Length: 150
Image 1: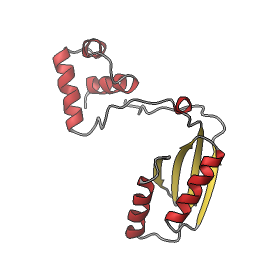
Image 2: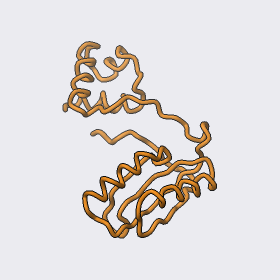
Image 3: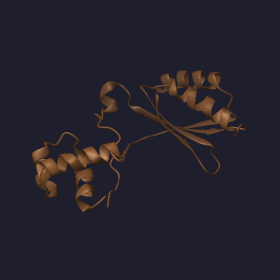
């Protein structure tokens, strides 16, 4: 990746629907060269997808919960089963295997506390977990999907 590719990525992360002419002008190349660079980055897997970012509050999902999970099972088969369980929960928007005191971290979005309680009950019935603790986000101060491409 050169500087033009990086500039393209920075602009696309702000607005993936920016017109090609405008993007090409902003990054300093022709429209055709810009389009080729984008296609090349898509084929290389650098650009994974072009999506719409939805305002969760406006569609009735104002509550964000970070769920810390500990388990006594640390084998690949258990993790595969857990990953399969996680896929069945649309409320889970992010899923990480962690280092430190917590084994896994989930980001969950729900309409309200009662909905989280329902989610929690379904989750613990789906797979054996040692400890589940939840932290409710009080305020979202920064949210971005843009990576710092430099």
